[in-house]
Length: 417
Ligand SMILES: Cc1cc2nc3c(=O)[nH]c(=O)nc-3n(C[C@H](O)[C@H](O)[C@H](O)COP(=O)(O)OP(=O)(O)OC[C@H]3O[C@@H](n4cnc5c(N)ncnc54)[C@H](O)[C@@H]3O)c2cc1C
Image (tube, protein in one colour):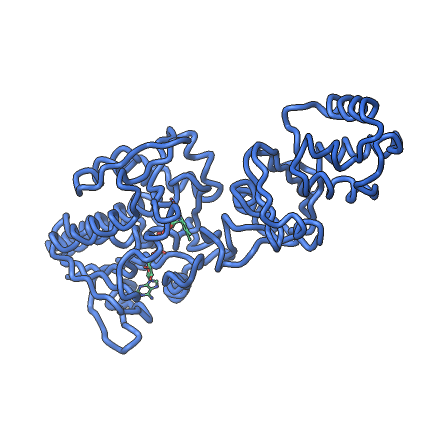
């Protein structure tokens, strides 16, 4: 009996390779004209393929599905992934923050190596083949049908169709429909690791401004749930950059964004009192300087102008004319510049999908559905996602392996029976 893998991304390719290594006949169906279209653009084309964080640190970077993934990540961890890639002719190199990339810095080398391995193992790769449905007989997978009506009989189907993020790469949520048709629950889908929109005009005035070493804080109903230091970028719609992306993934499921208050600490190295004292001193020592010129010594000039404006003070006010209350307000603004966020951007700009196939209905050791025999899920289709750093690709490879191996073993045991 054949194992069909639906989707030729990292999860699907690794599933197909592992199933073939276990001796199964494998057909890999990919709707695009080539394999790994999303993989190709990962890490800005450099492909941040995994991360050397220890298991506890890695877990802290997986906001959803961490405990479900524990066994897959232990069975095939970053070391195993690096060794495997090395054996396929793709040596890797570790960079800052434990991020691992192909030494060649080319995502295309990873896809090429995986495609080569699929060929070597005799996997039948069918491109331009979009699966429309998965069929079942007596509670078990029986076949999959392509959009053009072609039916492929199979004893196992591995759904590795990705999520909804960057749909131009082919991931448009088909796998969720297959899961629902099989009776699975799919938890609400929303964009993750995605920029944030603001309806405040002043943020647009700062378009292109990148702030390094600032702290972004977010509170939900006055409870602080996010407080991280890093880089933030103002855009024509609001906030982007690593901090904004991480916040988008850390926000609680279902939290209404207007209820989340967000602020930026522009001087995290200074206590509020220090900011106030230094501002007071600079004002006293430079009475004839304009406020904007003084503040430009603290922050980029465009922000030096926006800060007093946000306090209702004209930026060109002479320092000598700045009242005490204004100075206190300015100092508070430096430590907590509020930005009203209306919500995340859409799937078109998201790195990952939040939500997916309910993990309670999937066996974490085999990735097999608990509802339908021979149905497996791998990669982003699952309701699991991580922050940036290479963890999402590691999840795709680890779950793909579990699913491929388990599917092949099931087929073998059924054939023997
Ligand atoms: C811009 C960007 C950069 C990223 N950079 C990184 C990074 O550096 N490191 C990292 O860890 N993660 C990164 N990610 C996330 C990572 O790419 C995904 O987590 C990963 O690709 C998920 O793998 P997957 O195999 O589950 O899904 P995908 O890679 O989405 O693959 C799914 C495949 O299934 C195919 N498919 C879908 N429906 C059907 C169907 N009905 N029939 C047949 N085929 C179908 C699709 O065409 C696609 O090829 C990035 C994501 C984006 C968008």
